[in-house]
Image: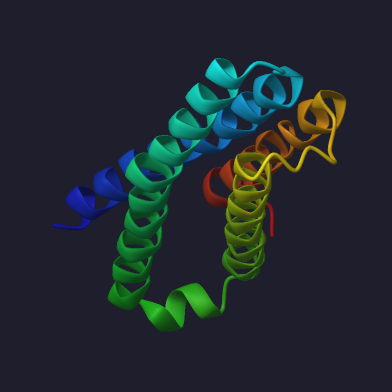
Length: 141
């Protein structure tokens, strides 16, 4: 049972990060668009990606993670790496919701952020991924 939960948790994580890598990349192209057809296409793609992939994957990641935690809560709570990892996951959830905010602003033709901004914004989940994997696998402290 434990290995199934780990597998489902990891599958959810991979899907969530795939969405978090691709959604801001769509923002880059959306911010560069100036014709109605392209803009409408990006609005649709962003909405489908967010609601059909990113949200379910985030909920799966959190749900399976909580389930794994509940198998040995006293063990996990005494591990510093785990507490730091949970902090990073909470920040990642915040990033996820910031993506929703940008998605809505772009859908309303509010292009206050440039494609260059979104190119940098797009790199943030990479940092989270690296830190979370190191914490979960290496357990440096």
